[in-house]
Length: 337
Image (tube, rainbow, N blue to C red; front, side, top):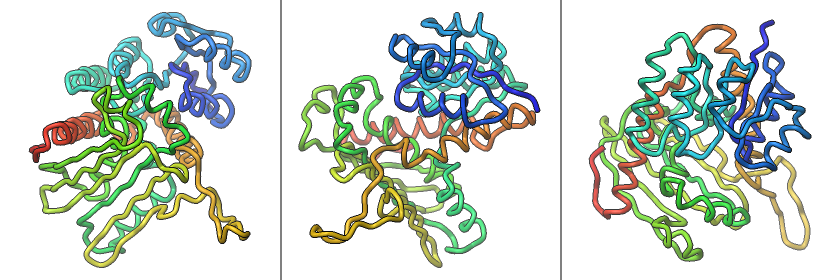
């Protein structure tokens, strides 16, 4: 069995998840190199992951490291040029969402992918690889709920992690680019259609630091689709109970709800507080299996010389919709997509 040698760029919270999966959980992959501008992250790679080929310069890693592929888990604004550089260097590329933080960047990434059709490009829309979302898609394709016409999605980060959200708010692209891209992708995936217009609102009641950089702590968007379908997205950063991700797909003959209660597990605590179900604390916990599945699929695509189900164009479309949503949020007007 061929082993794919991978270099990772970025070892923050999600970067560590991907790095551990590559290093310890995917049998046909090995983590060969790591790049970060944060010294503590390189120490982590050395001490916890056993990686000794370490870099602070991404281009230097591409030039010198013995790698077949790169996993890009850096700040969103860095993704597209890093994609282009890696593909031009002959490497297969996995990148976390979003594809980019503006459409010009996304088009550069598209052009790079088109220049290198022999290489695998994989965009990390990991919810498509979550067992519950994949099951929902299968049931929809089987006709279990008739024709799907509405998707309602909620994605709220826990209050316990809000300081990190505040820290990166200024460079995140705004709440919809930062937090709604997965839900936008899922709306398109489940409805198999494209939105034509959007109206959005945002608000901040608890942490004025978000508005100080032109962002908000919570927001809602409503979408109209070409075939008349509807999408509703609610995103936020202050869930007091934990990481709350919920999706409902409504069809002419039924509906499917995914994670209506963001349960940590199947245990329920009975005590003087009543009946308590603990919630997951963050996205690495909720989507641990999905992150592993998508990285395994990336490696398998390389080994089997095939293309993944998610394309660079899905990334551009979701980013474009995200920016249209941001425009609607900022202007207070309905925006054509």
